[in-house]
Image (cartoon, rainbow, N blue to C red):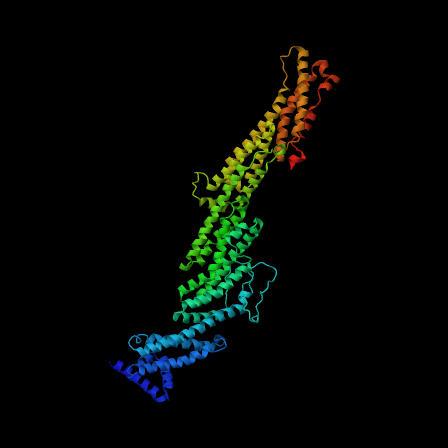
Length: 621
């Protein structure tokens, strides 16, 4: 009780001092203000207690008069308030005092109409102050970014040429130039978008605006300024604003270049620009997490949607096989940036952007699977009309095998893409292995059909041998071989050997039969006559076969040598034995008589075999 009495006496003394020293009501009110800031016990509410006959309202009015004079002076100023630290501090102190008065007297307003009138006036003053602080906030953001070298000295594009507007000296006339970040190549970097002192000033302004209930206005101004900066920075990376329809109409070569620019822009945006904006938001709106999150979303939404829309346009575009590799690039970029999407857009306001990024990433995976389906269709539809000259390598074989080898350089990505489909892998194979095996099966079936175009069965087997050997060679020396496995390679090598045997049997077995000696012929004369006929037919067939088969082509040097060695082993012993036997038939096989029938020596046969499969100029192309 004694303590309460002491406090009452202290308050009474304070009121008396203010009344005695104050020559007028305004001065007395100023003295009461000094007391209220000096000691928590001298609050305006307590100092006003006990005054009768409307004196409490008078105290409130005098306080508002004093604050009105201070705030009005700053509002009417032509120069930026924040150009002078003392002015900005005084302005903020006046706003704080006005907010405190409003809070202290708000519980009285419902019972006392004069107090309600004063508080309405206070709200009006606060509104005017907020309008001015909003202007200062906008101006400070623009001036701070313009003059801050930490942003201007970084280049975010890779152009070697300076573009108009690269330099900002702060003296550009009436037109406000938008400062933009400049090129850099290190993605592991967060830029301080504004000077630290400017950020502190912006934080103090934001704190007052949010505290006074003007958070939306503050966030709107902040977002508008930073969004313009961010979108201009993304534009400097070469990324154009394109609709989905414009992307789909773009020539493929032009789209390839656009994808390259998109990849660079996406990496810079997600790893540098957006994290930098996130940090700036958190510092300006420190202590106001919801405002920071909302402002960040508004700043980054436009640029993020632009990036995602382009990726989506690629995902839902043409499934033409040649597009696979660029679609893979976009898919891998999205995949590698998922961690950044998760961390940068982690708040509730950015949930839609985060989910959209995941959806488009999955849609790109669907596009890749769709491209492989289109490759299957391309193989099925490839016509079997014109035969490849000389039984050579068919263009579809070269195209598909080089395509699959190139695709398998992204094996890990493709494994991921196919594992995310609804397919069920076999016990010992991944879904990608199943897919590749199926494409190989389609190709082989297609080649079987194409081989039937050749009227000569031997040439049919040369065609299958050429294409089969090419397929095996392309498979075994890369990632495709690891996918299909050693068993697949062994089986297809066996197939090539089978084609080899079939060729040899089809083209040379009949000729080999002519070199067999029939020991049942009656007498020497009968045997000699038979051998002469056989030798005659052999020479004719051998000439014709060598003439034709020398125009056929075997591209693989090792296979070509294997074929020649195999034919030499088949023919030379039989031919040597035949002419040796023929020469032993007395006078018939000697001298001029022998030369009349023996056109080739063993060495001649070998030389002719070595000229086989070189191909004509047309076949070698």
